[in-house]
Image 1: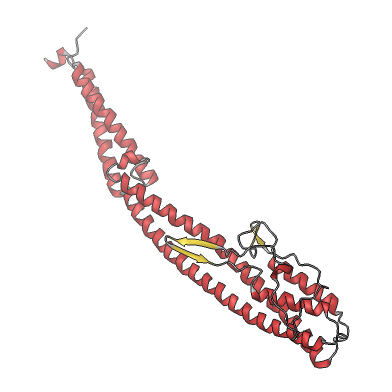
Image 2: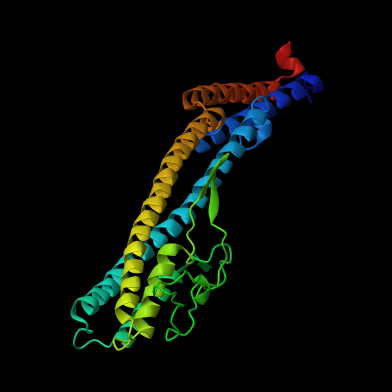
Length: 310
């Protein structure tokens, strides 16, 4: 039988070329299908350190933005509660004004029931929770902030029939204010506690309304104190709305800047990771041609004998 003259070294060289070409071909096909240069950092070793840093920065930005969602929700709920309390306040103010003007409670209204209903509304608005957290309890987010005592117990009146602040009558939270880090080096205090003077004055006015009857010798002075408290409470609630609204605007502005930063980082990351489709296709075509040529060489070598060589 004729002997082949192709030596082992030639075959190994061709096989090695085929193996490398096949690997490159698979890599090009993967690049085209995933639109990425590599599936791991080793494939872009010259840029891997920079890519890791950029990805860490983007994750940090995204963490801030995720936290913004929760902070935004809490502030929106706070604003809704404050706005709703303004309606309760106006109802109390209207009844006190009529009692002072006419010297009697309007027909068809039981002031005691009225006071109980209004206190219940205040409790509902200030005991609001988001994701299991009481928003108006300071840092004691697992404690219901408003748990009033007996409304029949009047605040203590001084010689001029005025009363002093008494948040301990109902407040179970603490004095800490909710805060959040919204960006690197930027922190906002956005919380409001149920012990705030605006809420306390409204509750004190309701207590006076419930505990003082028209027949009281000093009811006019006491009701006037309650009315003054309500008027002052309304001003305070408006100030709270403005303050929280300002924080909402600050959060929105910060979130917009972070979104721009995230998009910028994503663009750089994409430039590092993304494959050049046109280059990948051209190299794929070149590798396919080379692979076909290698296969043809193998076939020729396998058929080459001493007889055909001579």
